[in-house]
Image 1 (spheres, helix red, strand yellow):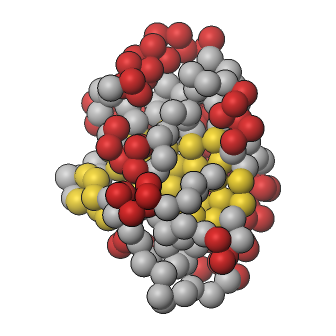
Image 2 (image 1 turned 60 degrees about the horizontal axis):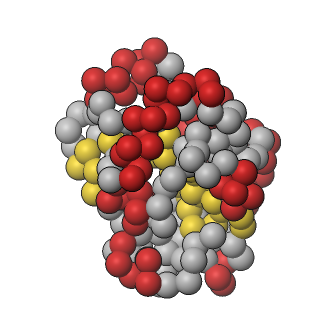
Length: 201
């Protein structure tokens, strides 16, 4: 897969990649990020089932009723290393208000590299092992980090590609989602339905 080949190249290049985003498409990806959707125009997030570090299957729809920060990342990604301490803090600060951080690692080497990283950096939120299929379900995750903020109704409210907002920017967006009511009529959708609708970004 093209994305898999990119991951191998990016790991080899390391620091040569842009700090703003580990991406093969550079500034174009940065410009696409930092997008907010008004409640009426938000698209339901595509559901998925991925394994966590304990081998348990986790579905995104398990989190319906909560605001979710869904972060696609990798251990070799420089900007991801900047954001992960923020996300660890957000998990601790907002978890009792109906908020959860869910990380999706796109590392080719899987848990062999991800588990030690999580322990070293004391990551306190759930991390799942992703794949090309789930990346494509979200419109093609070609840059890392790519972060989706999902409202209590399971709809995508904000998209950030690369390091396109600050810690305070994330806090503001999370607060907006936590203060809003959930719409029980808005379901998560399968990947096919998500891709068939208007663009999430």
